[in-house]
Image (cartoon, rainbow, N blue to C red):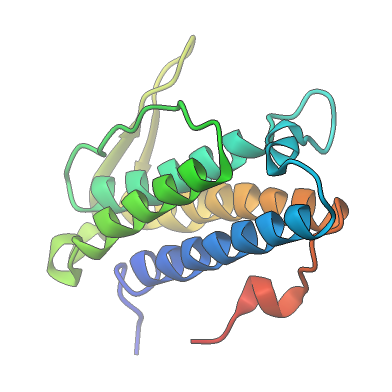
Length: 169
């Protein structure tokens, strides 16, 4: 029996994005418990040439909503990239979750061979078939940025463990 494009995408994104809200909750509690401004987290990077924490959240969410929209043959919704607090970042994740929860299995059904085009700055757009896009571009990109967020917080003392990343349903 094969799995559906929907079950391999939207529920996976929803689970990890929901976990990410919890990570930010723990980060804020950590900052308050240690008596420092949670805004410090917004400047975190793993390396000088990497994007900071807010960008990791934005890109993870954009990857998820972009994937669901493209597989459904729709234009992804655009969100402004203007969050300056942990609460605003949590709200962005919640907006992404709300969008994803509005995408049904029927919307994505049959998208395995759908032509997916990803616009790119300063180069030709990337072109994929739906299944390849999901398995080899959208999911890896999403998890790269989610994992980077997790690593930034964990490295900076937030009490996160593997269970926080995987949280069973």
